[in-house]
Length: 618
Image 1 (spheres, rainbow, N blue to C red):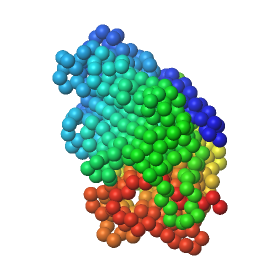
Image 2: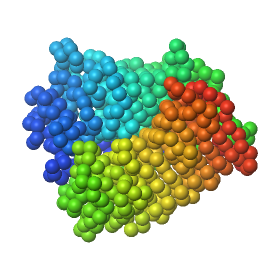
Image 3: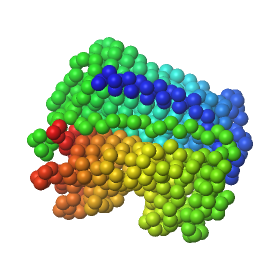
Image 4: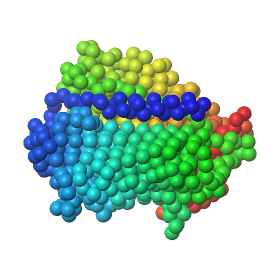
């Protein structure tokens, strides 16, 4: 079984490599900015394009007007200073990952005193200010620190929905940190996916981050460590680390153990490291599964009750005994099947893009856009087009009151920038059924404080994908569902349907569960919650597995008896769980009902679990 899973992991790594060749284009539309055409960038590797890129980042985020897509044509763009994100967004897409290079000129740090990174997605290097920096979207390009010792590639800060995807970060053997997610407090949750990092001291640094998700990342030739975790809960899948002394370092925090690092790793390959040291070091809390190493003395050194693993492989490991309520609960996680998001090729034929605004969709008027959205979908389907898009708003909303059925050839519904769609009624839905395309993806649809619309998969076979969106994902059929980088609530109402979530951030107060699984299969990597009441409820024989969860327990009332996790005659497992609070902690972390017996935890304070097991082998 382990050999089979290793083969699956290798196949996913190969898939990520293939996807890095993706060619991204956009139609000529007022909602699309072209870095060369609109801002005068040259991209010849000689001209200074700093000012052009900075103006473009600002404009994409909505400075001076509605938010828009920033498209960067292939070229090498030299910068002499850190590019800084000041606003919501931006929405930045390169034409090809390896063809678009943003490079810091040689020895820039010596001549420009505030150049600590090539890109920084927060206005300050030192002051967090707030956790309201949402919707960062960076896709499909390369960041190169040049010949600048100690400079970071990306100082990464984003909250709730923020995504680095198909990015290559080059440190030239002298860089500081490839992706520095811990340079400032209040960061997270966010997602790093399908990204390659090479030639830094540390690949990814994630201390004091409020939930980090790392999916299908490759780290090579780092001088100290691949990933560093402290005061954070991190969910990691399909990690490849090569030629690096320590692949993963989960650290402790001596002043207060509640800030120790917590990590859940499923699928890891570590090779060509330190022959006298381990691939993984742990002085915090660690869950690891399906890990293989070569070129190291051993796979794991852990200062924990379960100690070290001296061989080269880990089948399954938890740094402490699993937390269990029932004596017959298994001592392992559920190990639900894992699927990557299905590949949906980018539409490069621009006549296959249809603008919903040309069919009457408008933001800010308060009018119902249901009919306009449906007209756009139907017009696209009638001519075999694949992509329906709406223009980014400036905070004004596209109101939607009814149902829109996604039919025929339409594969993608996407906002170009911040597409704020708010539900005027509970019937506001985009619906996938058996008349839809085999894969339908919703992209950049955000409610941002309003009532989210619902995206529903009621198909027997078709797949629904939701990315970088704030919606309610509803399953009422049997087709697969994938939710990636979303501030979503989930409702799975159909027994046997499966949903895979990566970087899930539902928030609010609930008696019945922000995430409800009634008989389905739910696998999640990287979850962050905020608020009081039931977070996950699993019932009707459902199966739920969480890998890496950060719960910020705000709004928990005095003597609140509602559990964080509620399991009713079902199967549940959670690995790498961290709860923090600066008010009341959950009094009841977990409640289980099993064949008439009801048990619940009676543990206050902050929580750090390597593994909770709420299922039995019988």
